[in-house]
Length: 425
Image (cartoon, rainbow, N blue to C red; front, side, top):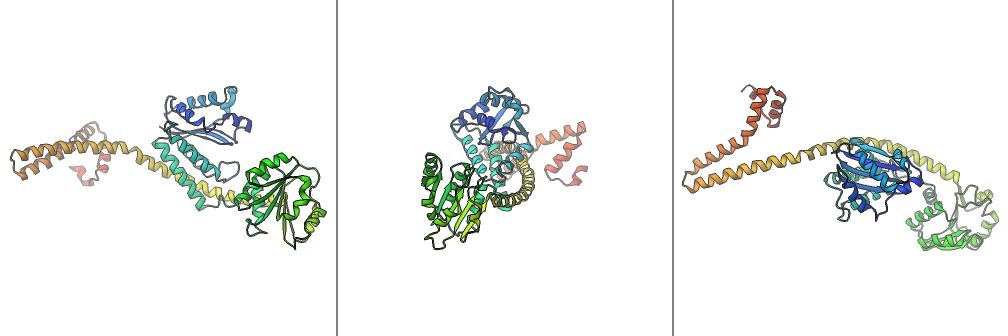
C-alpha cells in the first residue's frame, strides 16, 4: 500500500480554478469519508488552502486514477479538463512532497511558516470522529514525521528568518528607526491587501494605535475594525499626520498624496521626534523632496525590493540546505516503515511461541499433579517446548535443502545468528 499524493496548486492552476477545487472546513469530514469509501483507498487526509488542494492517501496500487476522477467530479464537474492540472506523487516522491510542503519549500512565498499550521489542522481533522478517523496508523506516522522534519529545517537552516513580503519588509525597516512599537502611532494610507498585511504585522509586533486613511472611508472602517484602529478619509490626513511616528502608504493615486508642505506642517510641535515614511505605491504617494527633510526617514518601493531580494536569496540558500535534510529524512522514514512492516510478523511469531509455551506449561503442571519428580517434569518441559518451537523451522529448512533454496538457508542462518561452522553439520 504506497503513499500517494494528488493535488492542484498555484504551480498548475490560476486562482479561479483553485477556488473551485477548494474545500471548506465544513465540507472536509464528509469528503474524507467519501474518499476512503473508494475502492483501494485505505487512509486519507485533505489539505485545502488558498494556494493548494491536496489529498494524501494510503492506497492500493492502481487506485490513484479513481481518486483523481472523484476529485474532478466532486469539485469541478463543469471542467472536464481539470485533471490535466492535477499532479500526483507516489511512494518516496509523495513523502518528499509532503516534507517540502510542510517546510514551506513549495509555497508561493518561499519558506512561509503558515502552511505547517494548515497541515496540522488537516491532519487533526482527519483524526476526528466526524471524519471517520481517515488518518490511520501509516498516515499518522508519516505526518508526525513531517512535522518533525519541518521543525528540524526551521532549527537547522535560516529558511524563515528573513521577510520576503513587501509589507513585512516595511515593518522590519521600521525596526531600524524605532526599538519598540507599543507606544507608537502608525498612519496607514490605503486599505488594499498590502496595507492590510502591514497592519497585521504591526499589530503582531505590538502596535496598539493605528489610523487608517482611505479614499473610501467605509473600506477604511472595515479594515480598522480588525485592529481596533481609527478610520479617516484622505482629506483628513493633514490633521492627523503630526500624531504619526510611522507612515506606510500604498494607494493607486496617480499623484502624490503627501507633499513636503504637509510634512513640514506636521513637524510643528514634534520637537524633532523622528518620522518614518514607507512609500510602497507606484506611482509614489510621497513627493520625492520629502526625502531631504531633517528627522524624516523615507523608504520607497525600490528600497523594499532590495531588502526582499536579499532576504529571498538568503532563503534560497537555506532551501538548498533544507532539500538535503529532506532527502536524508525520506530515507530515514523508509527505514522506520520497514520496521513497521515487520510488526505483524513479530506479533504473530510471539503469539505462536506464547501458545506453545502455555500448552506445554499446562502439560507440565498436570505431570507434577500426578506425582512425577520435578526434575523429570522440568526435562519434559524444556525438551517439549524446544521441539515444538523448532518443528516448523526445521521442516521448512529440510524442504529448502531438498529444493536447493540456498538463499533461505542463509537467511535462517543470519536470522538466528548461527556460527558459520554450523553449516557443515
